[in-house]
Image 1: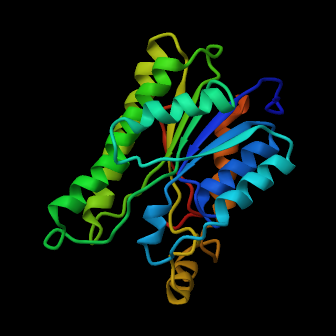
Image 2 (image 1 turned 180 degrees about the horizontal axis):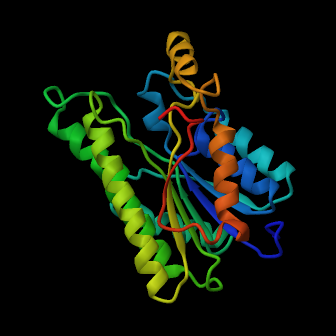
Amino acid sequence: MSRGDGSSGVALITGASRRKGIGAAVALALAREGWDVAITFWRAYDERMPWGGDPADVPWLCNQLAALGVKATAIEADLSLPDTAVHIFDEVERAVGPVTALVLSHAESVDSDIMDTMVDSFDRHFAVNARAAWLLVREYGRRFRGPHGLGRIIALTSDHVAGNLPYGASKAALTAIILAAAKEFGHDGRGITANVIEPGPTDTGWMTNEQIAEFSRRNPQGRVGLPIDCANLIAFLSSSKGGWINGQLLHSNGGLY
């Protein structure tokens, strides 16, 4: 499919299991720009989180993508397992084609502080947020055969560590991995760009009304982030117009920090 800028691409977006999530917004934004789209999801994670999981969300997203006229596929994948990255890329290539843009929007996120974090939770956060990111990036680098300068890696991160230790620490590791890819995949001839986005508090269903009001009060824009805010930035970075932005940690939060 055409990207809308004369080139073509397949976008793989992880963590797109909920229609209110950033992953779903990114999938739809890229599809509107002509990208073919593959998404991953893991219902077991949503089901153990306070917001719960709706089994209708993934079919809804797939129907929305089909209505936009792009090829699309959805893969249920447990990113805590080391072999999952290879499986995902195999499935995407069979269903849609070789991946041009890799968007990492998945996360393990369970609040706990330094004293209360359990070893199994710490390990699970690093397996999903850091190790899976590395394995997906590595698999993408191994398989990328696109034109020089058109490859894209974009990941969502967070700087929320105090009171949220395993999440924040593992996201910091993810950030380091992606920024390393910006240099390694640029100098090795692939010409792939890699950037990280810190979207700030975003209304994806996890905030209480009180939290939304407090974050809105503190933000110069007078509101919290919406999934489309992050999706619009990712769509730009994925386009040829965003190709000169590389190796950056971008704060897309309306000026909150």
